[in-house]
Amino acid sequence: MIKRLIILLLLSITCVTASAQNWGGGVDESDIHFGFTFQYISAEYKILKKENWRKPFEDLSDPSVGSQVVTGAVNAISSKSSPGFGIGFVVNKRLNEHSDLRFTPSLVFSDRLITYEFDPPPANTASFTTKEMKVQSTMIDFPLGFKLKSDRRNNFRAYVLAGAKYSMDIASKKKTSNAGVPVLEKLLSNRKNFASYEAGFGFDLYFEYFKMSPELKWSQSFQNILTADAQNPYARPLDKLMLRHVTFSLYFE
Image (cartoon, rainbow, N blue to C red):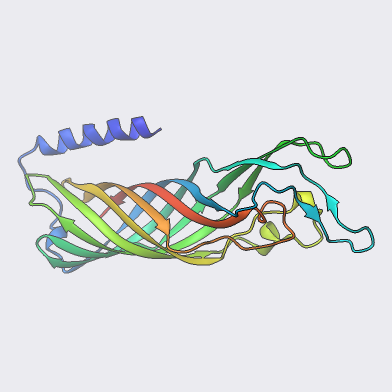
């Protein structure tokens, strides 16, 4: 998928820069202009573990039974990238010839994955040695970025971008609730609201009546987004989870 996007980007740059006409509908001369965006997202966690993260989990939820060891010792915890997508709007404020202020609110659908590897569990528990947790999320992102642009060359211009965003998870509580759930089937929960910093680069490609901008951006949450739960076997070994996104966007303005 990424290779196809790169090939498409290179072909677009070649076609647009081959033309000598200064197209674009005058969008760069407008004090404020608008647009929309489509996004492909790759999400993963940066995992920080507790000192005793390997310790088997003891279930203390039933005082009449006492403590029960329900998992083997933890051997590894990892997070692989998970794809997602987003759609959004663009509000661009022109500061001068080479800089803009951009507000790009987006609706993002992106799951996050984290995998646990255990020693064989005690004989009286469920027999699994690998467990993959999926954290489902539907986010509304509010990014605010500063765009620094190069000189325009015919119908091509490069730029870099830096800024921050505030994210709100609007996924239903039913999908993230652990109420009445057996201990080994509990879900891993994340904070509903958090902020991230981000940076990226892209290219403005000018067509006759509009401008298209392929952009690659990286972001990471400022703070820990893990919801701590000492009675959750998947949250207990974790000290912090930092969310990372790599986003490929196509802007049309």
